[in-house]
Amino acid sequence: MRDPYAPSPLVVIGVDGSRSARQAALWAIDEAMDRDVSLQLVYAITAAGGDRDGTVAVTDAEHAINDVIAAVESTGKPVKVEAEIVHASPTTALLTASRSAALVCVGSTGVKHALQGRIGSTAAALAASAHCPVAIVPTNTDATPRAAGLILAAVDESPASSAVLELAVQEARLRGAPLRVVTIRRRPPGDGCDADVSAGHGIGAKLDHRLTHWRRNHPDLDIELVTDHHSLLNYLEQLQRTGTPIQLVVVDPLRPGPTDILLGPSGRAALDAIGATLLICDRQWWL
Image (cartoon, rainbow, N blue to C red; front, side):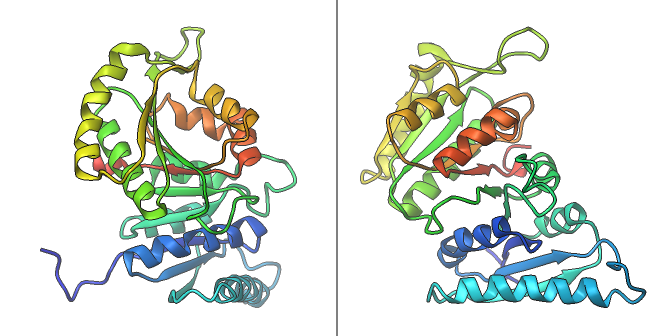
């Protein structure tokens, strides 16, 4: 039983003054409300910003935080917002926060990477090393996570798949959204093939048996297994071509695998095009 006097894990948002970070905070509102916890805005200051006492850097941080708070309050949703300015690198600050957080949310592109069209280094580092689930939110996503759209869970036969599936079911129920469980097979690095390919009917049959448990416990949940595809990225592009909305893709942090692909240029382009958030499972669920 959880200690009733222990602090509740927060939903942590990395703030850096970018539009992407503000969008991440808006996306995270329902996540915090569902858990009945606060949003914790974290702004990391790595240098004094050109002045001796760091006044400029702190002022910039306060402006960025106030901008996000105003955006959250404008939604009218009853979520509590807290804020903290940390003197550390963004990666260090958020990795430290992830040790006690329920979820860490960041924008896919921070201030430094917005013009280069690539995922921010902080998001990539969190994807690999965070101690809780990490949501990487594209700038053009719908700020309301309960909007219509599929939840995709990329699973294989690894131990991580149980955690990925459990998290995906939780998110699908939160949003009242259909869940599609996409089978993948991992190949060893350097074999000349994509790291993420169709798993075939063998893995699919085993997963379908496991899905019976979730269908029985949640008969109102629309959950289907998807095995007929070349790769996860190919399936995303196929859904995009058909105009099928996707709001969330749940993967695990193992490498090589779909996380690497979706953090790369092609995956980033696909996620941005459909406005889907990448949700990376907590590695502690399967270690």
